[in-house]
Amino acid sequence: MPEIGVIGGSGLYSLLDDAVEIPGDHAFGPPSGSLTIGSVDDIEVAFLPRHGPGHRFPAHKVNYRANLWALRQVGVKAIFGPSACGSLRAELAPGHVVVCDQLVDRTSGRADTYFDTVTNHVSLADPYCDELRQALLDAARAEGMTTHDGGTMTVISGPRFSTRAESRWFRDNGWDVVGMTQYPEAALAAELGICYATAALVTDYDVGLEDDPNITPVTQDEVFAFFAQNLERMRAVLFGAIRAVAGNLPDCSDRANGIDPPLPSDADSR
Ligand SMILES: [Zn+2]
Image (cartoon, rainbow, N blue to C red; front, side):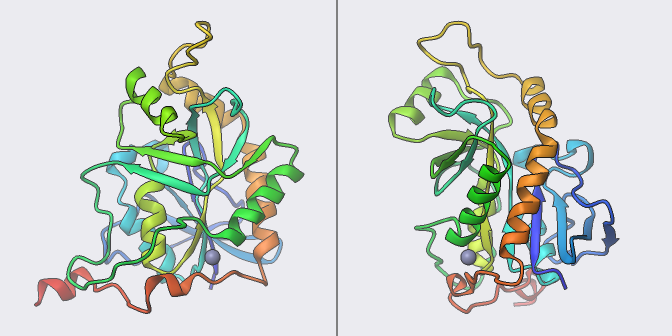
């Protein structure tokens, strides 16, 4: 059983060459795409494309609960969830990696908990696993990428990008990058007691930089193209991080308070 999982972001639709598709557990609906299991060296790794094949599900339509559940049901205890992000600060430049340590949820209307019928208040004070973060930091630096230790991800609903006023407000609040998927992904991992961390690849400057009129607001094509250009490096970062934690897996299981989520079918029958 694979103990390490990867949820691939925009552009990362497959990870492992020897991957074998396995039927997932669909208790919370079908995940975005096929769950595959492959290996890095001799380490078994489970993989899911967050947005499905061909980016079928935009961020606000991803069934995050189904994705995390499918990984848990094959035994995954630690998840790397790389993502693309826009930068709110000049010093976080496109091509840099931000290993976030905080997030702010600005989404709405997403199914963001497994605990609708059983009470379980998990702590999300620290949404990211320290050990997984360290593994990503080390791997990104080893890959020669400019890497930032910590940063706050502003998670917006999308699919639209931010207005200039929103982007300025995010920055003025002290937040660093903006993306669309870290919430509820990180929160659901906490509810399942699964270690979770992201390496956020900066693809753009969101609406631009106010003191540089030459930097124009981000477009969808730019994000996808930039991520594609950096795909092999991000893959190398993930492989490095996987090798670093395999055999000495961190444990965030106590975050779930020892309470298993009720299955939707259980709730229906009550
Ligand atoms: Zn952990």
